[in-house]
Length: 64
Image (cartoon, rainbow, N blue to C red):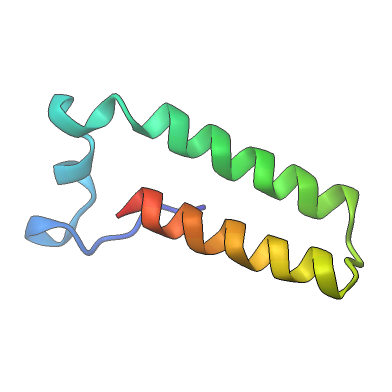
């Protein structure tokens, strides 16, 4: 997932300061695991799609 520029001053640096920086390895790892799951199962059934959508929502909340 690419960094965005919606931080203070229009860049990502506000989120990479020491106060927030500790969490990013965990977030990045979670995103990588999610991408790996998507690669393993490119054609999920309806139940799996529902689960994957929920995981995606949780990842977005975690990034917030």
